[in-house]
Length: 436
Image (tube, rainbow, N blue to C red; front, side, top):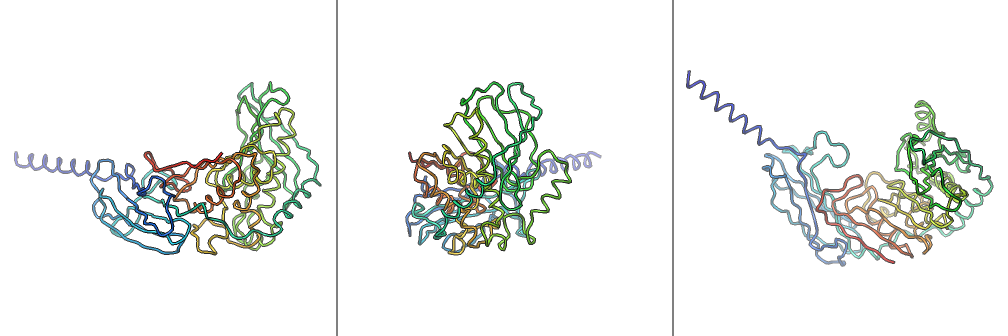
């Protein structure tokens, strides 16, 4: 009897130890950095050293797992490798023979090559991975030649906008803050399908004439439904503008039908190359015109101070924020984060681009952030709130070109190991460039 009890106790203890040693990927990360603190400070042909290292938060490395790594770059060269999972550093040495970026990825995978995911975590951060890179003489990067009639095209779009009177409709909405008024706004606008500029405005109740700065906010790519806020700032005007010009405060079926209607030839909005061949037929045409109208509206408000006018947005909203700098001459500050659609033609000359990249045709050159950045006046401060060295939805080469083309005061925050939707936990290799 005592033997049986002893065996049972030993078995229970063994199971307990095994359970305690079970690997938890949620706590784990793969970190990476370059041998230079400024990861974009390399010269053509100079050796670049990456140190990649797993952090399992004190746990033993998972058995029968491997770290798979890949080196790619704007030179189209690819190297791969894999090593047994451990906390030992992985050293990758490389270089680039022209200005551009090198990309290094590393993922924790099981013995069958399947990615190790983090249960309960959504988005890009649900993997144990590193995705980052290094830049080589990035100050020399430029996009493809722009259309010769670029400025004439946008002068024509201004003429189209001027032909439609600025007649905003403001519908009061409930506010949880007695000091803030909220309105649903609809403003007639030209463009494909002639959809209006729509969005929600918040403004302090007691605002005096010419007393407040004004801000326009733009959204990331998607078919989400914009709903009215319940509060707002008490010291500024904010206009939150949707990209599509749909009617506000409708039922779900209206939005389901609307989002289906903006697909084109089987493509999600903005991605149809046939539609984009003619820049006036492009989905972006209506978005840009609605953006220009949004700023006309803000400047017409008697409470605007006539001085401070800002744009904000990330990804597609970052694209629109860059457009604002080029298309709104009175803009004083633009704040694009991870701006989309920069250097759209870069892949035709070998630069890396990810899957979420619009098929290149000449018509999209009129909307490319790289070309727009050249038109931002020196009176506008450009604050690129994030540029990610592992983001190939918005490749770092294109974001660097935006920064290069800005003539006035500017700032950019580069983040190592950051992808489009993921910023790694501190400590990060990050750095700021600023020019006044």
